Image (cartoon, rainbow, N blue to C red):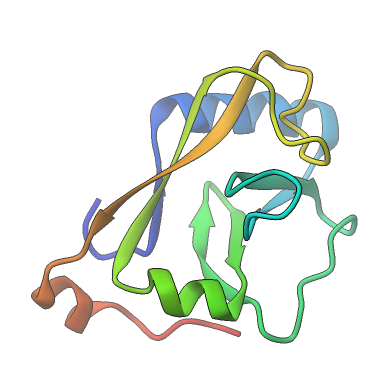
Length: 122
């Protein structure tokens, strides 16, 4: 979907709905590559604190999606697409143990799309 910094596949939305049924409201933080590589991490709201340099990319079905400021600078020209695939989730992420995990795919924005994007929230 053009015009947004983050979107999701139907598979990711289905996994998100499954997790919400068990945990209530959640948020995502795009991991910067420490313990869990570069996986999108899913947390129950209140279990993860958004840092002062984190950037809000948007929302997926009401679940806010964040990325660290330095990582955003590297990826600001791309749209992040949340997907769900077979496998184990990140060890701290709510998709862990479900035999499905979130995965980030990306695509480059066109110059016109970049110019039309709204400012990000920090």
